[in-house]
Length: 105
Ligand code: F3S
Ligand code: F3S
Image (cartoon, rainbow, N blue to C red; front, side):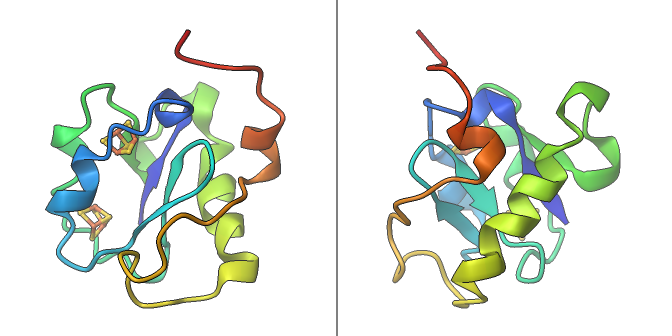
């Protein structure tokens, strides 16, 4: 799967959403999260993010390695809706994101 990391927090550019053929990039309160079971690893989202927040799981920079867990666990309660557009904003974040001080100031 691909994952979204720290640079997305409090920015949410959303250019990535338009590129995903399976609509598996879901919006949380402070960042977006890629569904690990719905992502088909097409990679189309990765180059369009203006802040390079998106990585293939094995290529995630070491300092953001915990974001793999954040993307996966975000969906523990959400499940697998099969499409982000119909779900819209999910008013929560993974705990490691929720605990961050304001970013992008
Ligand atoms: Fe975030 Fe980049 Fe998408 S900032 S919303 S991952 S385009
Ligand atoms: Fe979509 Fe990016 Fe995966 S475009 S299918 S989330 S690699």
